[in-house]
Length: 127
Image (cartoon, rainbow, N blue to C red):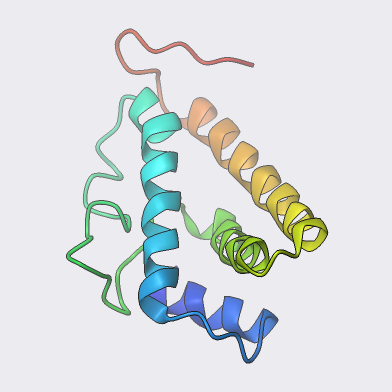
């Protein structure tokens, strides 16, 4: 999934939102940076070195910037963006629902990583 696709899908779920694309890009940057440090860097792999909003950040993202999570887990980005918009609007109950779905996809991604890649030196997986 690209940054542009994630933003478009989130905008479809939250039509007429007033949040700028640069703010949504920043949220995607935060999401990928967090996933890289908490999941990807704990694995012995270089498969994700060239992708992600965190490594391709240049005062913003291009529409075609490929995000970190593989296609099967891409809905996490849409739910993350919707949750951030909801939190910014003070809609905490709605945001918590979105964060729960995001968390479910994130956990599935972590499990997939643990099954697919050996742990990095010194890293321990917590089950």
